[in-house]
Length: 289
Image (cartoon, rainbow, N blue to C red; front, top):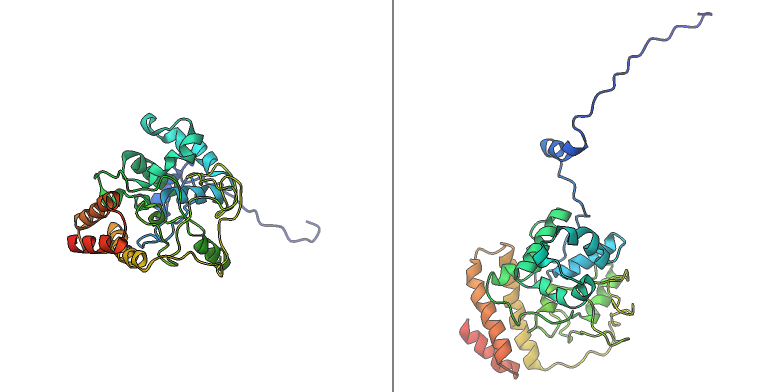
């Protein structure tokens, strides 16, 4: 061949894929590869501590990480899979007001958390609700009617590059102070004076008002509202006990869950029937436990 050395023939064999697209999940399981999730497997914040994230906060962050509004995410990805009994209508009204019930212990909270587990591949998202706390016990009076937050926490988290979210503890009706700063929790935007939507219909960044977009944080050197010593002492005791509840719900403690159901129920009933001074309330709770 004109003095050139001949090229060796190369045989290329196209192999068929191990499985087709439909069998992809089975193949991944057989190879020990974790199955892919429909949605990003966002890890909830603070699980097992008093800073455990609330379910609506997780939903909001999940929407924002997908670059869509949380309401849009619910409409497209969750609503088609919800039972007719738990498919709220209209969704806009539900997400703005009624979605606070997703923090509770009813069937609605359980179905939504279970569905999110399937879509994200994250387990134990029911820990972001009161379901692990109170089981089937009546949860009436446990929850705030609108979202609460600590503006100082928001500011510090943003400065440190931490996720901005709403802990479940902040949404508990008897909690009025932040467990870190002992600053009174806020429930209305300082700019527009409106409450926050439990599930946002906007694409504003976390920590922004869901109604007007204003920043909900406060400078760390801002003047802190004065809180009585009695309130601080009482909240310190409650934070310690609820810390046990959060850890126990995740199975971090050997104490049986039923042992913690009674104190929580006592706290809830007492908060509905008694008034300040908080020191007297603390003495009563201490005697009951």
